[in-house]
Length: 176
Figure 1: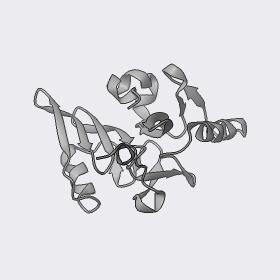
Figure 2 (figure 1 turned 180 degrees about the horizontal axis):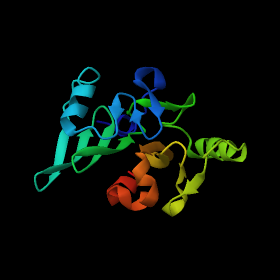
Figure 3 (figure 1 turned 90 degrees about the vertical axis):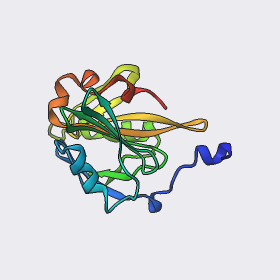
Figure 4 (figure 1 turned 30 degrees about the vertical axis):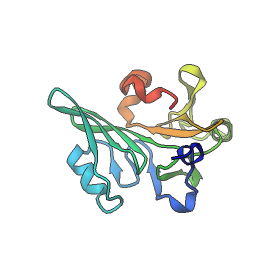
């Protein structure tokens, strides 16, 4: 695999198109699903099987590397959806594409929403200045694509908002 293939970014028309229902679902994935329910929900979308990481006997992470998803579980329930900037499904919030975008463009969109007085459109920042929206339950993290950074959103349920930076494992927030 050449360097350019490693950083290849799928165009939107080759990605699955998903809608965000804040704090409820990302495409066919609903927060609170068990690992088996997630596998079933994605069985018609990708032939890839979910690879699990366990802590003891509990599933704590599910990965669909080729499809571009990393899933976090707390007590065997879906608690975080991380969408790969290069190859993951395109997720839309209020008609705006959130995956594989220029980070400053999405940050400006979130700031404009907050300034326009959108109810609960609170713009917050995590460590290293990574923006998030309290209204959408999303952190717009970044991922490397060659010499550029693209958006790699992390979606969470409402209960994560109390302590977002500690709700999911620390490796979720690392630039990859």
